[in-house]
Amino acid sequence: MTFILAIVFFFFGLSMGSFLNVIIFRLNTGRSFGGRSKCLSCQKTLSWYELVPVASFILQGRRCRSCRAKLSWQYPAVELLSGLIFAGLFLRFTNLFYFGSALDFSVTYAFCAIIFSLLLLIAAYDLRHKVIPDIPVFILIALSFAGLFLFSGGSFHLHFPAWQEFLYGLLFTLPFAALWFISRGKWMGLGDGKLALGLAWFLGPSIMFSALALSFWSGAGIGLIMVAFKKLHGLKSEIPFAPFLFFGAILAFFFQLNFFPSGF
Image (cartoon, rainbow, N blue to C red; front, side, top):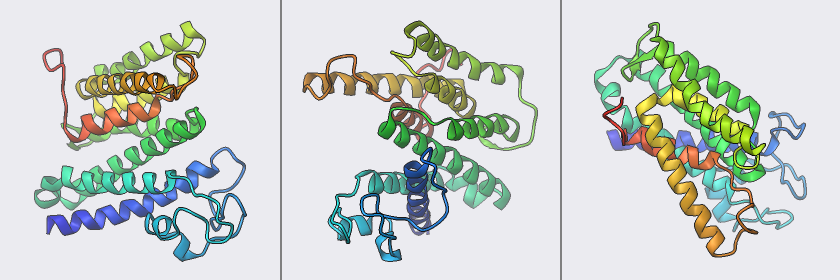
Protein backbone atom coordinates (compact mmCIF):
# COMPACT_ATOMS: atom_id res chain seq x y z
CA MET A 1 0.00 0.00 0.00
CA THR A 2 2.79 2.42 0.92
CA PHE A 3 4.62 1.74 -2.34
CA ILE A 4 1.49 2.30 -4.42
CA LEU A 5 0.74 5.57 -2.66
CA ALA A 6 4.35 6.71 -3.14
CA ILE A 7 3.96 6.07 -6.88
CA VAL A 8 0.75 8.11 -6.90
CA PHE A 9 2.52 11.02 -5.21
CA PHE A 10 5.43 10.60 -7.63
CA PHE A 11 3.16 11.07 -10.66
CA PHE A 12 1.51 14.02 -8.98
CA GLY A 13 4.98 15.48 -8.52
CA LEU A 14 5.76 14.93 -12.21
CA SER A 15 2.76 17.08 -13.11
CA MET A 16 3.87 19.76 -10.66
CA GLY A 17 7.35 19.66 -12.21
CA SER A 18 5.81 20.30 -15.62
CA PHE A 19 4.06 23.36 -14.20
CA LEU A 20 7.30 24.54 -12.57
CA ASN A 21 9.00 24.38 -15.97
CA VAL A 22 6.34 26.69 -17.36
CA ILE A 23 7.08 29.21 -14.61
CA ILE A 24 10.87 28.88 -15.01
CA PHE A 25 10.74 29.52 -18.75
CA ARG A 26 8.19 32.36 -18.56
CA LEU A 27 9.21 34.17 -15.39
CA ASN A 28 10.47 37.73 -16.07
CA THR A 29 9.82 37.38 -19.82
CA GLY A 30 6.58 39.33 -19.91
CA ARG A 31 4.58 36.21 -20.80
CA SER A 32 1.67 35.17 -18.63
CA PHE A 33 1.67 31.81 -16.85
CA GLY A 34 -1.67 30.92 -18.43
CA GLY A 35 -2.35 29.79 -21.97
CA ARG A 36 -1.11 26.85 -23.98
CA SER A 37 2.57 25.91 -24.04
CA LYS A 38 4.54 26.56 -27.22
CA CYS A 39 7.84 25.43 -28.68
CA LEU A 40 10.45 28.03 -27.78
CA SER A 41 11.98 27.74 -31.27
CA CYS A 42 9.07 27.63 -33.75
CA GLN A 43 6.31 28.91 -31.43
CA LYS A 44 3.96 26.09 -32.43
CA THR A 45 1.26 25.42 -29.84
CA LEU A 46 1.95 22.01 -28.32
CA SER A 47 -0.63 19.22 -28.23
CA TRP A 48 -1.45 17.40 -25.02
CA TYR A 49 0.60 14.35 -26.02
CA GLU A 50 3.66 16.59 -26.41
CA LEU A 51 3.31 17.70 -22.81
CA VAL A 52 3.31 14.37 -20.97
CA PRO A 53 6.03 14.75 -18.31
CA VAL A 54 9.30 12.94 -19.14
CA ALA A 55 7.61 10.51 -21.58
CA SER A 56 7.16 13.10 -24.34
CA PHE A 57 10.78 14.17 -24.03
CA ILE A 58 11.98 10.57 -24.45
CA LEU A 59 9.56 9.48 -27.19
CA GLN A 60 10.27 12.59 -29.28
CA GLY A 61 14.01 12.00 -29.05
CA ARG A 62 14.55 15.29 -27.22
CA ARG A 63 13.27 17.26 -30.21
CA CYS A 64 10.25 19.34 -31.14
CA ARG A 65 7.93 17.32 -33.39
CA SER A 66 7.50 20.29 -35.76
CA CYS A 67 10.84 22.08 -36.14
CA ARG A 68 13.09 19.33 -34.73
CA ALA A 69 14.85 21.80 -32.46
CA LYS A 70 16.53 20.21 -29.46
CA LEU A 71 14.67 20.44 -26.17
CA SER A 72 16.37 21.43 -22.94
CA TRP A 73 17.33 18.73 -20.46
CA GLN A 74 15.73 21.01 -17.88
CA TYR A 75 12.30 19.62 -18.78
CA PRO A 76 12.77 16.01 -17.61
CA ALA A 77 15.25 16.96 -14.87
CA VAL A 78 12.82 19.31 -13.10
CA GLU A 79 9.90 16.90 -13.61
CA LEU A 80 11.79 13.91 -12.23
CA LEU A 81 13.17 15.84 -9.27
CA SER A 82 9.70 17.13 -8.47
CA GLY A 83 8.30 13.60 -8.67
CA LEU A 84 11.01 12.24 -6.38
CA ILE A 85 10.46 15.07 -3.89
CA PHE A 86 6.71 14.49 -3.74
CA ALA A 87 7.16 10.74 -3.31
CA GLY A 88 9.95 11.30 -0.78
CA LEU A 89 7.78 13.64 1.27
CA PHE A 90 5.08 11.00 1.48
CA LEU A 91 7.62 8.44 2.69
CA ARG A 92 9.05 11.03 5.11
CA PHE A 93 5.60 11.52 6.66
CA THR A 94 4.33 7.95 6.38
CA ASN A 95 3.80 7.64 10.14
CA LEU A 96 1.81 10.84 10.17
CA PHE A 97 -0.28 9.53 7.26
CA TYR A 98 -1.13 6.25 9.00
CA PHE A 99 -1.25 7.28 12.65
CA GLY A 100 -1.91 11.02 12.63
CA SER A 101 -5.00 12.95 11.69
CA ALA A 102 -5.87 13.70 8.07
CA LEU A 103 -5.57 17.42 8.82
CA ASP A 104 -2.06 17.07 10.29
CA PHE A 105 -0.80 15.09 7.31
CA SER A 106 -2.49 17.29 4.70
CA VAL A 107 -1.20 20.57 6.15
CA THR A 108 2.31 19.26 6.80
CA TYR A 109 2.64 17.58 3.41
CA ALA A 110 1.21 20.52 1.46
CA PHE A 111 3.41 23.01 3.28
CA CYS A 112 6.62 21.06 2.65
CA ALA A 113 5.64 20.28 -0.96
CA ILE A 114 5.16 23.98 -1.69
CA ILE A 115 8.44 24.90 0.02
CA PHE A 116 10.46 22.35 -1.95
CA SER A 117 8.67 23.21 -5.19
CA LEU A 118 9.74 26.83 -4.69
CA LEU A 119 13.29 25.70 -3.90
CA LEU A 120 13.40 23.59 -7.07
CA LEU A 121 12.06 26.49 -9.13
CA ILE A 122 14.64 28.88 -7.67
CA ALA A 123 17.52 26.44 -8.15
CA ALA A 124 16.61 25.69 -11.78
CA TYR A 125 16.11 29.37 -12.58
CA ASP A 126 19.46 30.28 -11.01
CA LEU A 127 21.18 27.50 -12.92
CA ARG A 128 19.64 28.77 -16.16
CA HIS A 129 19.98 32.54 -15.71
CA LYS A 130 22.67 32.95 -12.99
CA VAL A 131 20.27 35.02 -10.89
CA ILE A 132 17.81 34.22 -8.12
CA PRO A 133 14.30 35.56 -8.87
CA ASP A 134 12.84 37.77 -6.15
CA ILE A 135 9.18 36.76 -6.25
CA PRO A 136 9.64 33.00 -5.52
CA VAL A 137 12.21 33.81 -2.82
CA PHE A 138 9.89 36.31 -1.10
CA ILE A 139 7.07 33.75 -1.20
CA LEU A 140 9.44 31.18 0.31
CA ILE A 141 10.46 33.59 3.08
CA ALA A 142 6.84 34.46 3.86
CA LEU A 143 5.81 30.80 4.02
CA SER A 144 8.81 29.83 6.16
CA PHE A 145 8.03 32.69 8.53
CA ALA A 146 4.40 31.54 8.76
CA GLY A 147 5.68 28.02 9.41
CA LEU A 148 7.26 29.21 12.65
CA PHE A 149 3.72 29.72 13.94
CA LEU A 150 2.21 26.61 12.33
CA PHE A 151 4.63 23.82 13.25
CA SER A 152 6.33 22.70 16.43
CA GLY A 153 8.51 19.62 16.80
CA GLY A 154 7.93 18.71 13.16
CA SER A 155 4.13 18.51 13.44
CA PHE A 156 1.25 20.88 12.77
CA HIS A 157 0.59 22.90 15.91
CA LEU A 158 -0.49 26.54 16.17
CA HIS A 159 1.76 28.35 18.65
CA PHE A 160 3.88 31.44 19.18
CA PRO A 161 7.56 30.67 18.54
CA ALA A 162 10.41 31.65 20.82
CA TRP A 163 12.27 34.82 19.89
CA GLN A 164 15.41 32.79 19.09
CA GLU A 165 13.61 31.17 16.17
CA PHE A 166 13.20 34.56 14.49
CA LEU A 167 16.83 35.42 15.19
CA TYR A 168 18.26 32.22 13.66
CA GLY A 169 17.07 33.15 10.19
CA LEU A 170 18.72 36.56 10.37
CA LEU A 171 21.97 35.08 11.71
CA PHE A 172 22.24 32.69 8.77
CA THR A 173 21.63 35.56 6.36
CA LEU A 174 24.40 37.79 7.72
CA PRO A 175 27.40 35.83 6.31
CA PHE A 176 25.88 35.85 2.83
CA ALA A 177 25.11 39.56 3.09
CA ALA A 178 28.66 40.23 4.29
CA LEU A 179 30.18 38.30 1.37
CA TRP A 180 27.93 40.18 -1.02
CA PHE A 181 28.81 43.56 0.49
CA ILE A 182 32.58 42.99 0.74
CA SER A 183 32.90 41.58 -2.79
CA ARG A 184 30.30 43.95 -4.28
CA GLY A 185 28.40 40.97 -5.58
CA LYS A 186 31.37 39.14 -7.12
CA TRP A 187 31.65 36.30 -4.58
CA MET A 188 28.03 35.88 -3.62
CA GLY A 189 24.72 37.33 -4.77
CA LEU A 190 22.33 38.99 -2.33
CA GLY A 191 19.67 36.53 -3.49
CA ASP A 192 21.59 33.72 -1.80
CA GLY A 193 21.23 35.55 1.52
CA LYS A 194 17.49 35.92 1.02
CA LEU A 195 17.25 32.23 0.20
CA ALA A 196 19.26 31.35 3.32
CA LEU A 197 16.79 33.34 5.43
CA GLY A 198 13.82 31.32 4.21
CA LEU A 199 15.70 28.03 4.51
CA ALA A 200 16.85 28.74 8.06
CA TRP A 201 13.31 29.46 9.23
CA PHE A 202 12.08 26.33 7.49
CA LEU A 203 14.81 23.87 8.52
CA GLY A 204 15.77 25.18 11.95
CA PRO A 205 19.36 25.94 13.05
CA SER A 206 20.73 22.40 13.42
CA ILE A 207 19.53 21.08 10.07
CA MET A 208 20.38 24.40 8.42
CA PHE A 209 23.99 24.14 9.55
CA SER A 210 24.18 20.70 7.94
CA ALA A 211 22.49 21.95 4.77
CA LEU A 212 24.99 24.80 4.49
CA ALA A 213 27.92 22.47 5.07
CA LEU A 214 26.73 20.16 2.30
CA SER A 215 26.10 23.16 0.03
CA PHE A 216 29.58 24.59 0.43
CA TRP A 217 31.31 21.21 0.23
CA SER A 218 29.46 20.20 -2.93
CA GLY A 219 29.84 23.67 -4.45
CA ALA A 220 33.57 23.70 -3.81
CA GLY A 221 33.97 20.19 -5.17
CA ILE A 222 32.06 20.88 -8.38
CA GLY A 223 33.85 24.20 -8.84
CA LEU A 224 37.27 22.58 -8.57
CA ILE A 225 36.31 19.81 -10.98
CA MET A 226 35.00 22.29 -13.55
CA VAL A 227 38.12 24.42 -13.29
CA ALA A 228 40.35 21.34 -13.54
CA PHE A 229 38.67 20.22 -16.75
CA LYS A 230 38.78 23.77 -18.15
CA LYS A 231 35.02 24.01 -18.42
CA LEU A 232 35.19 27.46 -16.84
CA HIS A 233 37.19 30.47 -17.94
CA GLY A 234 39.25 30.63 -14.77
CA LEU A 235 38.22 31.08 -11.16
CA LYS A 236 36.24 34.27 -11.90
CA SER A 237 33.52 32.40 -13.76
CA GLU A 238 30.10 32.41 -12.15
CA ILE A 239 28.85 29.30 -10.39
CA PRO A 240 25.22 29.65 -9.27
CA PHE A 241 24.94 28.72 -5.60
CA ALA A 242 21.17 28.19 -5.28
CA PRO A 243 21.36 24.66 -6.77
CA PHE A 244 23.86 23.70 -4.06
CA LEU A 245 21.66 25.19 -1.34
CA PHE A 246 18.80 23.17 -2.79
CA PHE A 247 20.94 20.02 -2.79
CA GLY A 248 22.07 20.58 0.81
CA ALA A 249 18.54 21.33 2.01
CA ILE A 250 17.13 18.21 0.35
CA LEU A 251 19.69 15.88 1.92
CA ALA A 252 19.63 17.54 5.34
CA PHE A 253 15.82 17.57 5.52
CA PHE A 254 15.04 14.08 4.25
CA PHE A 255 17.81 12.38 6.20
CA GLN A 256 17.58 14.74 9.22
CA LEU A 257 21.31 15.31 9.13
CA ASN A 258 22.81 17.10 12.10
CA PHE A 259 26.58 17.50 11.86
CA PHE A 260 26.77 19.82 14.87
CA PRO A 261 24.42 18.36 17.50
CA SER A 262 26.20 19.61 20.60
CA GLY A 263 25.55 23.31 19.98
CA PHE A 264 21.88 22.98 19.12
